[in-house]
Amino acid sequence: MASRAQLAQGRSRQRREELLAAAIELFAEGGTRAVTHRAVARRAGLPPATTTYYFASIEDLLREALAAHIEQWSETMQAITAVEREMAASAADVTELVRHAFTVRTPEVAARELSIFLAACKDPMLRASAAEALTAFEAFAARLLARFGAEDPQGVAASVIALIAGGAVRRQSGQYSDAEEARLLVQAIGRLTGVTLP
Image 1 (spheres, rainbow, N blue to C red):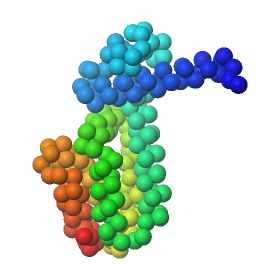
Image 2: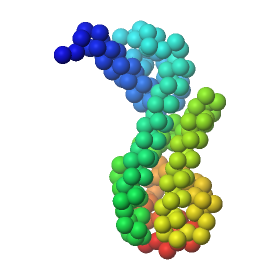
Image 3: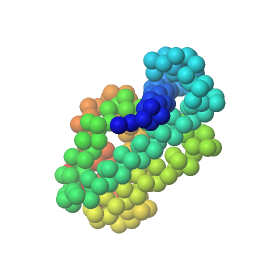
């Protein structure tokens, strides 16, 4: 049975996580101006003074929220890498992987992630975390490209990531359906790398 101290620590950790999640939601909706002590506490359903109890400043709260989100994104990339290792090396798998990614990462999720990465890259204390996450994504892309016979997978991986980021921006317009976006992205990657993809 958990002691009172353990229960209190668990509640404290949960409140802190609720504040971080609320800060990310507000940031995605309105940028840094939307992230105030009062707004974060309200969104988390907690008393107004809660944010100042857990964080020295609103900047510290936002920085920690962004860092936590980037870490979560990196963990997702690691999970995708595990799936990638199990995939058969067929071009149809790439298209299916992109379609699945678009299903999981809706345009709204993609917009939030773009906003978070842009903000993190502007913050000297978070820039290294953002770069590390993107480097891991490039390594994943390079491994996948090597499996499909790309001539210079390491050299072209950064360009592929730039294509993916550009596609994420275009998805915000709703110009194409997700199925069409997936097809266009896979086609563009094939043209860039010289790898025949469906």
